Image (cartoon, rainbow, N blue to C red):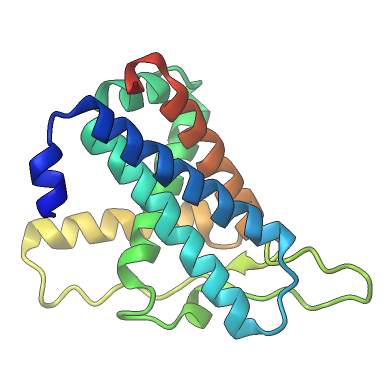
Length: 182
């Protein structure tokens, strides 16, 4: 946080941080399809890392390159825009819940292995999950968390890991490459 405070408003620092975040995100998403998963725990770890990397890039663009992010969102057709916004809201829900309130296995359904058909974890699916415990949150926090939960249920649950991360990474690459992001 100290580094961020010292470099707030520094365009070179912002561009550098965005660049390494995008690189880390791309590597995490590529690992989803590339890595041979030896067991479920390893698969859950790879997916958890991708959730973290995707949501870090999303947050960096929203906070530090807001104009580029909004322009990239507005450039999408309405149905695509809703899918992208819902996907990110769902991934934020996962990030906030996974490992703290729910085990990764509660979120992810591994694919039953078929001989010769190992596609990494991209064929695994997001499971529907029960609603979050909102008791300790103020009303505004409850509304925020429920909106993300509903997005998770609508845009992630039942869909494959590959579909979700493919959509998210493709959008973030467009938003980061937008001229206003530099």
